Length: 355
Image 1 (spheres, one colour):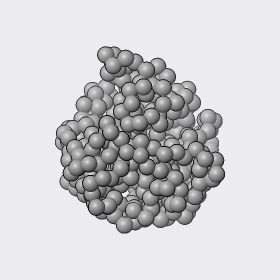
Image 2 (cartoon, helix red, strand yellow; image 1 turned 120 degrees about the vertical axis):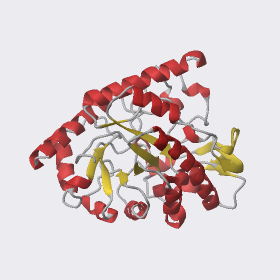
Image 3 (cartoon, one colour; image 1 turned 30 degrees about the vertical axis):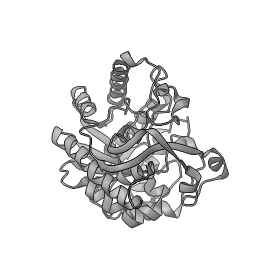
Image 4 (cartoon, one colour; image 1 turned 45 degrees about the vertical axis):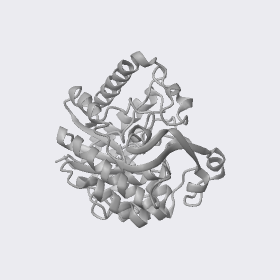
């Protein structure tokens, strides 16, 4: 049983400049130019970056620890190793065509959206064997605190591939859900405190999310005994142009109907109000209280204000805290300052309630 206002990352933590070329994050899946170290020392460098991420999380006082996703090119591409997927001969599709009709973003964001090279689905999707298991084992061996592992969600995975095999995205997404379920079971059997599916495309593709998204989540989570989390955001803070919209609250309501135990939401950067939390019913909420689009470190007072605002709708025993999204691009000193103040704010509110 988690105590109220537990603190955690969404998934990723600052990736050091000596590990990656930050400007190359949009390179095609598997492009080796993303990594700075040579191939023969890359694993050692990723291990060291993981140790540093774990160290900072513990030093800040986080309750639940991740490995900072230091081995991942991106949160999604790391898992594009399913059988039936060609990650060498890539397909190209228009991000504007896929996303811009479904989400209300400003013109600055629209100008930055580009076509993307993505893996092609050329055969039946299957699980290739454990993909994140060694990451989990490394994490477990380097902390005694509760731990969380993140995996790409089936809808987002389907929307990030060029489908050349299945009848439609729904058929592809449900096939991916079955393969992802095998991955989650391997993590669950190894021993992990939380398993999180990352599903930003629930917001980007609400038509698909409403049609089959919750069903895919339930297939992916089938038989999982540990705490099940879904993270749904607006995408990385660097895209800019975010603002609160009605679609997001509708999508959160869809996720609340799934087998997920907890829902991790973006709250701070779009300046959401507590009204949006009413859509989550009796779900446990992981509230995003850190704006990753800003280099300003939120004050403890500001974070406590946002917590109290949320507590007008969500009971204390169903509220936890995290940044809005992944922190891989945030400079380390700023990232640490943000999560440290989040911890201090949680402690202050718990103290006021005597818990």
